[in-house]
Amino acid sequence: MVLSFLRTVQLARRTSSPLGRQLGSPSANKPVLTLFTKKPCPLCDEAKEVLEPHKKRFILQEVDITLPENSTWYDKYKYDIPVFHLNGKFLMKHRVDMQKFEDQLTKLELQNDGNQ
Image 1: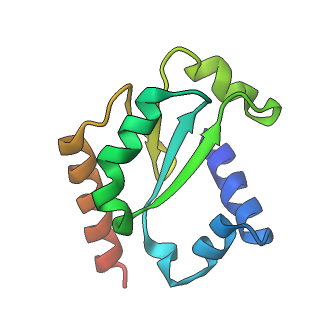
Image 2 (image 1 turned 180 degrees about the horizontal axis):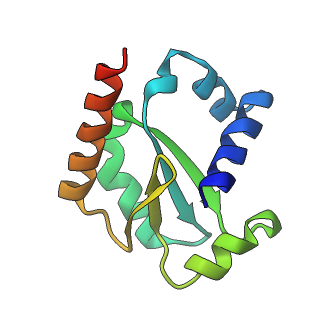
Image 3 (image 1 turned 135 degrees about the vertical axis):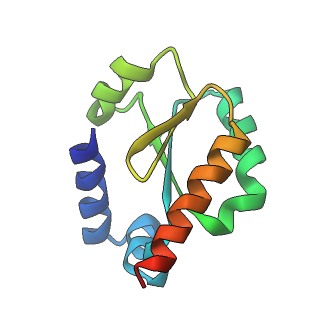
């Protein structure tokens, strides 16, 4: 799971995609919130709305689990979306738990501040 996340980050850095630019810029210290989703996903849309006020604090990466290259994620999460990972680690599924999200985001921000 972590290796897949690292490959995604490495690929993003090699491409000229918006994600690649974000990861290569000073915002690289921002935590990465990965949303595992598919179309349509009303719960995913609702979750993104809930997270909208906090979007300056993290980078949102969406992974469409229906794409062939994401079949592992499809097998794992097909009945559970939306699923969120924060910096490559499982965080929550089905609905946004704002308390859990805030706690983990703050923890990562404090770690990043301490490492600078």
